[in-house]
Length: 292
Length: 285
Picture 1: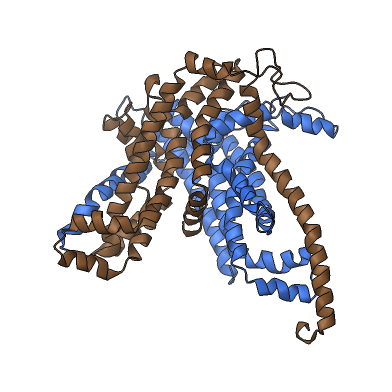
Picture 2: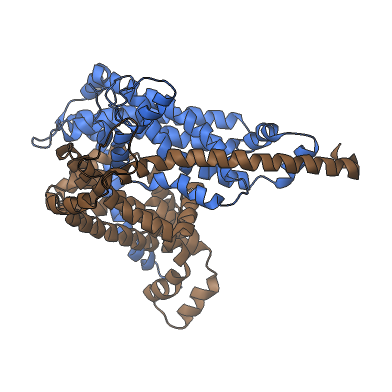
């Protein structure tokens, strides 16, 4: 039917379509803003609480969003009364290792799986992928017991090492290595480069975008890691922010303002990294979701 | 050009880690579930006693019921609602990229911070009750009322996940050929007709995928409960995995906890197989 339309009715259709579009823009924005409110209000509320003075009510009807007595006191106090700076540093150390180790391990594992021909290659690759099916809630207890037997309870190593080899990371890195043309490594080998040099100097620089993706995914996982530090670390001085805040909730229930300030200190690095790397973040999200 | 020893050099450490921290624990968990083990004393073989105990433990059934209730609330909403979000986020209006970032952001927030944010939202004098009071709805004791605690947790999960899932749908929407919509417009189809006759059928594989992923997520969730309610009030928000966690690390019943985790694993396996059957029956899916 559409093929026999006259020019006149076609333009009519177009006009009504245009009208419909402008109507939609209004409703589109309405729903977009409504959803944004749903997403953002919990954050705004926490920011508001963290700046509230001692005499400002935290909970009231109607809620007071803009602090009556704006103060930075809560941030100073959370800094002094709890070792939040210490927690912060611990989070940073755990995150640095939690990003670097998967990058190294996943690319080292993926390189031979993508570029070398050897017996059992497909078997090993499928084995690695199939471990994604082993549910973490089932292995949680034995992993804890193995960390315990290895004497890693109470150490950062016990937090970082168990999750360092991510099967998804191996998969993504292998995909990246597969896309490199053969000639490049061949010419390097003819020039006398050994296998480590080929890997380190030639191949790794060519998969930088995927390394970036993996770094972002690992960063989020490491910074937010909660369960393993909670289980493995015993000394309060070694807590990262997540565990520190979790324990803080219990002890400082009365001082909501301090908890709010602490939560925002934990949130800040994620927001900063997210805003500055937003393009790469969305790509990382796509590759982990669509390909995973 | 590569020698036989090269793959070994590269793969040795990664495979060792895989063996020690994934494969071995998978097998060990099964063995552990047939023992009585509290870390301090050597493990004692007890056969199926842990499984029998679990199936006659009202606490286990309660936690399974809680988990299923949570799943029923969370998964349908996380399957359907993000489709609308994706359609919205796919509109070519100014600033749409910023909106996409905003919707996606909650998934990056750690569970501990999420729990802190939402405990205040759900406070009796918090914002949610205030908004409800505008519509004349009385105060709800969200987190301290056993009837409301699971729905409250479901709201948090939806808040955290809808942007993430709409990303899958957005990728799907962008792969639908534009001429399908243009042809429908020429045939006089309106906005909703187009969504129902083009968007939804074209997204069907992703709908199934999201259903599977969010089901797995719902059955495994426990850190949200641990941080927000600690399973309370009176066990009303203790999910199966939270029970596993507490039995293992608070009561040191490692064997019993492993058995429960395996029962859950079988339930998830059956659900996945049923879902797979459903997909197979739909050749387009």
